[in-house]
Length: 196
Image (tube, rainbow, N blue to C red; front, top):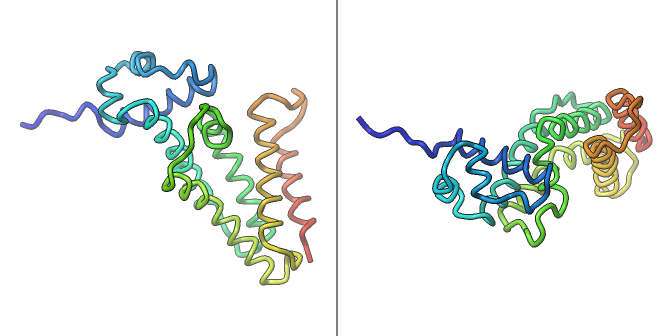
């Protein structure tokens, strides 16, 4: 009977989630492989076996964040109605950030000084915006959105959701602020503003 694998995908994901939590809560100095291993009740050997070292761990964390984000963006309900689809993508963006707030900082900030994603990781990160780009291009082609450069609408849509989500995750909104309702209202106003 073969020995069971102890350094499996479940352990890899637990290590990535805990690494993201440490990084998000305490900053890059908290991300020691020894502490990470202890927090997940495994050995540093397991961490090295799965990732190779700290730079590879950070890279895997970045990729995992965008892998999850891409799945949520691709899974957003699409109706073929550009304004509703734009709103659905904005809601999926927020849902992804709220589901994995510990990955958000590594994905969109310089949370680890000196970290630069490799070409493959960078390509994955850029690909996550493909559903947004496709929705905008379809909306322009259908005459729903203004006849402007698609990047103008794409980047502004990304900017509004990223800004609101970042404010929410960082606790920078007033306590009495109903984020969910305000978020969707802001998405709708923004999408309607691009009507032709």
